[in-house]
Amino acid sequence: MSGLREQKKAATRTALSWAAVRLTVERGFSAVKVEDIAAAVGVSPRTYNNYFSSKAEAIAFRHLERSLRLATDVRDGPPDEPLWEAITRASLRSLEPGPEVEHMPPQQPDEWPAGRQAMWAEPALQAELLRANKIAEKELAAAIADRTGRDPESDLYSRLVAASVMAANNVALELSVEAGQTEPMESLLPRALRMVATGLPTP
Amino acid sequence: MSGLREQKKAATRTALSWAAVRLTVERGFSAVKVEDIAAAVGVSPRTYNNYFSSKAEAIAFRHLERSLRLATDVRDGPPDEPLWEAITRASLRSLEPGPEVEHMPPQQPDEWPAGRQAMWAEPALQAELLRANKIAEKELAAAIADRTGRDPESDLYSRLVAASVMAANNVALELSVEAGQTEPMESLLPRALRMVATGLPTP
DNA sequence: TTGAAAACTGCGTGGTACGCATATTTGCGC
DNA sequence: GCGCAAATATGCGTACCACGCAGTTTTCAA
Image 1 (cartoon, rainbow over the protein chains, first blue to last red):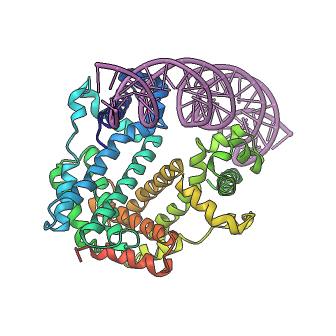
Image 2: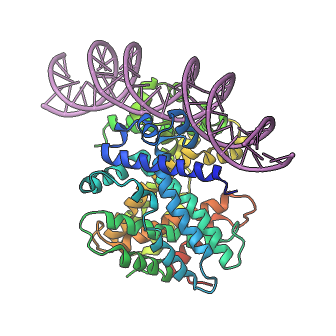
Image 3: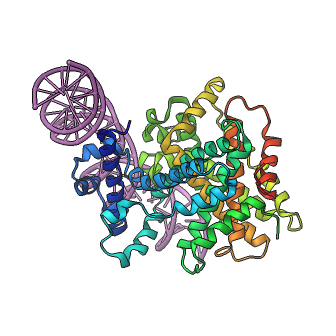
C-alpha cells in the first residue's frame, strides 16, 4: 500500500500541483501552459496529463488535500471529544501550510496576495475548487456519521453538519481574504462555526 | 433595458442551455459536440461561444437561473414576512420547472432519470453547477443583508445564512435524488432549513 | 428612413485532453 | 543480487474547443 511506488507518485502529484499554483499566482492562469508546469517538475507534458485531466484540477488539488485532511482529522480525533470541538480544532488545523511550500517557496512574496486573489477570481478555478470542497464534504459527512453512530448514506443530520461546516469555513476564508477585514482567522473561524452550531435566528 | 433585443438574447441563451441539457441527458456529455447544440437551436457554433465559454457552462446555466430566482424571491417577498419563512417559501418555489421545458419536452421520458443521473456525475458538470450555486449564494447574501439592514460586504451573519441555506437546499436535493429516499421534498426541504436555522447541536 | 450600435458569422490559431503503442522503472519472489 | 511481471513515463497523433479578428447582417431610436 505505502510502497516507494505510491510515495513517489504522491510526491509527483503534489509537486505538479504546487508548481501549477506557484506559476499561476506569478504569471496568471492563462499565461501558464501545461508544458511549463511539466517542465518545472521535470516530467513530460503527457505525464502531467496522467495525473491531472485539466489545468484547473492540478491547481485545485492542494485545496482538495487540505480539505480532506479536515475530514480525517475529525475522524481520527479523540472519540470522547465533543463533536463541535473536534470540528473547530480540525478546521483551524487545516489552515496550516504543508511541507511542500517550504520545499519550494514563492519567489516574490510581496506580489503573492495580489496574484492569489487573481487566481481565485478565475471562473474555471472557482469551479474546480468548489468541487474539491464537495468531495471533502462527503468525507466529512462520513466521519461525522461514524462518530455519532449513524448511517452515512441516508442520514440528514450528518450531511447537514458537514455541509454547514464547509460553508462556515468558506465564508470565513472569503472574508479574511477580502480587503478591509481585520479579525484574524483564529477568532473569525471559531465564531462562524459556533454560529452555525447554535443556530442562525433572525437577529 | 427590456427591449426586443434583450429578450431575444435571453431567449437564445435559454434555448441553447436547454438544448445542451437535453442532448447531454440523451446521449451523454462527451458524445455531444458544440456543433450539435448550435445546430439544435439554429445558430452558428461561433455564436454559441458568444453566449457560453464552455459546454459545461451552457448546461449549468439553467441551474444558475433557478438558483438566482431563489435569491430574488427572498428579496422581493413581503418585507414583514419573517426571514426564514421567506427563505423556505422561496426555496420550495425554486424547484418548479420553467416554461422552456414544456416548450421543447424530452423525447424519451423513461430514459430521462438515468441520463440525468449520468449527467450530474460528470466532473466537469459538477464543478460548473457548484459555481452556479456560489454565484446565487452571493446574491442571496445581498438579499438577506438588504432585508435585515446590514452591509452585504462585511457582514458575517448574512453570508453565513446564505451559505447555510444553499447547503440545506443541496443536501435535501441530493438525498431526494438518491434511491431509497421516500420523504418528499415538500417536507424534507423545510425540515433541513429548520435544522440549520435553529442549530445543529450534537444529538 | 437612416445611421450607429449590437449581434451573428466564418476563418484561423493556439492550446488542451486523451487514446494508443512503446520504452523505462519499480517491486517482489527467488 | 537477479530477473520478470506490473506499473509508470513518454512520444505521437487526433479530435475538439475557446477565442481573436474582420466582415456582414440585424436592430432600434431619432
